[in-house]
Length: 72
Image 1 (cartoon, rainbow, N blue to C red):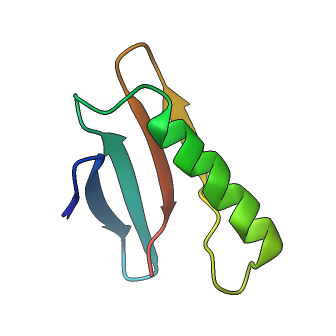
Image 2 (image 1 turned 30 degrees about the horizontal axis):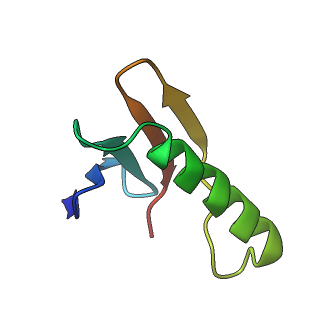
């Protein structure tokens, strides 16, 4: 699955119950773009937890940024 020019999206599942999406920046993505998206989703979830899923975790290094969230 691809999320435009910003991130690659990988879907995974554990059994039938747990499904996850992991979003990893594209090589040409401006640094901190994915981190800002992660922070924004956490804030939007605080405002409206019924309609916005809060990301579970994030990771960043010098070259990569990624975060994981539940997938519905």
